[in-house]
Each structure stands twice: as C-alpha cells, then as structure tokens.
Image (cartoon, rainbow, N blue to C red):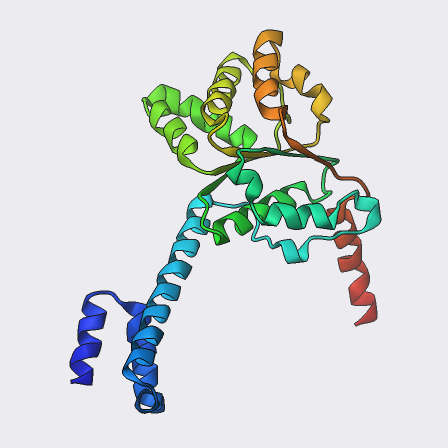
Amino acid sequence: MNQNTLDLMRQMKFNGMFNAFKLSLESGKSEKLTPDEMVAQLIQSEWDERYNRSIHKKIQNAKFRYKAALEDVYYRKDRNLDKNQIHRFAQCTFIDNFENILITGSTGIGKSYLASALGYQACSLGYRVTYFNAPKLFSKLKMAKADGSYIREVAKIERVDLLILDDFGLQPLDAMNRAAMMEIIEDRHGKGSIIITSQIPVNKWYDIIGEQTVADAILDRIIHEAHRLELKGESLRKKEKIMEELIPQFD
C-alpha cells in the first residue's frame, strides 16, 4: 500500500510529499507519528518544495549578472554604505511602496553586486524581478522594434515587481532609446520599483537622457521619493586583483 501511495504522489508531482513520506518509511519515523502529525509533515514538506521551486524559477527568470547575497556585502566606513539601511531594503517594503533605489559610484565599487543582492532577496520573498544591463536592454528593444516584438518585450518588463537597470548612462540616449526609457518609466510609475546603477552622478543624468522636456519627465518619475546610495572608496575589483597576485607569494 505504501508503494502505491508513493507511486501516486510521484504521478501527481507531489515531490515534497513523496520525499518526506519515503524518508519516513526508510527511517521508521512514520510509526512514531500520529496521523495528524504525519499529514502535517507531508503538507509542510510539499509546501516547502513548491516554495523553493518557485523561488528558483524567479531567480532563473530574473537573469542576474551576479550570484549575490546581502550577507556578503562589505560595509566598511569608506564605502559610505549604511548597514541598517540595507537591512531595511532587505524587507522589500520599498517594492510594496513602489519606491526606487539609485546606486551611483565609480567603476568596480560594487554597485552591480549590491543591486543583484537586493534582487535575489526580493526573489526569495516571492517578488518577480528582472535584471538588465541598460545598454544591452536598449539594443534589445531596438531589435524588437525591427522584428515587431517591441510591445511584448515592454509588457514583460511592466509585469515584474522590481526592474534592475545596471550600468545606466555609459552612453547618451538617442531618440529611440529615450522614447523606450520614457515608456518603461511611465509604465512602472506607481506600479513597480526600479533599481538603477550608474557611474554617472544623478545630477548629470539630464545630459545622458538629452532633450530637456523628456529628461524632466523621466527623472521626475525616477527620483521622486527614490532612495539614493552613493558608494565611495577604492575599486573592489582592483583590490581583489591585488590580493590574487599577493596570495601565491604566501602559499
């Protein structure tokens, strides 16, 4: 009878229940559990399995640049990074409130890693996240304009709870990219959150966007009630490279 039950669980794709029941039978623990305890254990195992699978799928769909964790973020004083503030962001209430986070600083300072870590945290709490390198996104949308898939691509971006735009401002926006940026920001205003990382200070984004009227409209929607993080200090990538060069000397 137990084997038949296991077979049915597998056929119905109750993988959490299957593994928990199989383990209980093999370990003999099932005999020590009351019927209600056994049911509770099976239901909890199935819930955990589906929840973890959902998180894994969300992380896959986000297509992060880095595998990042908030536990690994450096909080040295010279970085100008408030640990308590990051812990508040980890609760993801900024997503619930449709607020944005703007992360600026020099190259290699850890902007992309921090943005990705916040994205991973959001996925773990059940939010839908998508990550884009900004120049690559604009190139993708140009191609989508050409092949007729533009509306579908923009709609996919609109549906996520958190959009991460990495490396914004590496090059000025042309008319087509400016229009795409305006549409994305307009679609998300009051409906979803954005994390933007950039080497360029926020007060110079007007020059990057171009065309004063459009720039005003975009930045008004981005900056209003946005949280700003201006990272400082030396390049972490540079420090890591120096350490890699020094370590062999001590092996």
